[in-house]
Image (tube, rainbow over all chains, first blue to last red; front, side):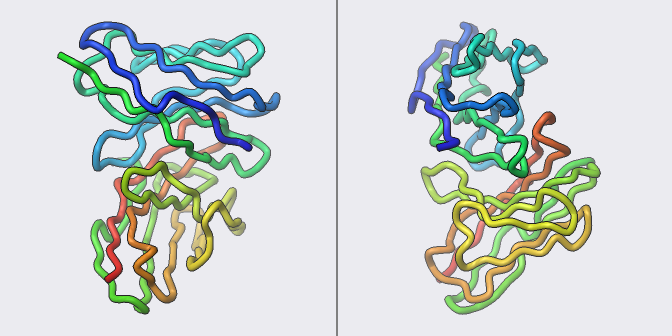
Length: 111
Length: 112
């Protein structure tokens, strides 16, 4: 199964770091790990992606385990606007690159 | 603005009617995708087009057809709408899996 495993929900306090875990134990060597988030009543929004090395961008950081069977999305300082459903997706490069969504993690941020 | 444009944004159909959802991207992306999202659920892939001239079934293709008209446009057709097709439909595009994907803002479809 190409889908990943994430906790159903997590809570965070505003201005604190958030670590969102994801398991993708059957990942293959050419699969990318993508993260998207979806705010209420909006389409998914790209957050970050990586292959083997840790990645940073203006939105977040992605830490990928050495064996690539898991990864963690890190929001360095959560804001109320970060409350959303976060999807970790394994993208199979050699099969049309299609995104197969799981249920995601619903992140709530408390002021 | 660059991105994925979906039309219409809202639509109400009667059971048995047909319609086409339109999607266009102006980022010169190779691949395009159609998803549906039911209330409280994650997105499910209906059809995708890995490159111009090709289309493939996704997780839930029954009741839908697609056309990759050119590199920019990818349409989704419901030939005979059913209440079970009431959903929000999202179109997405990508250059390759090594780049981020871009999603449209969605079409909210109600079949009565």
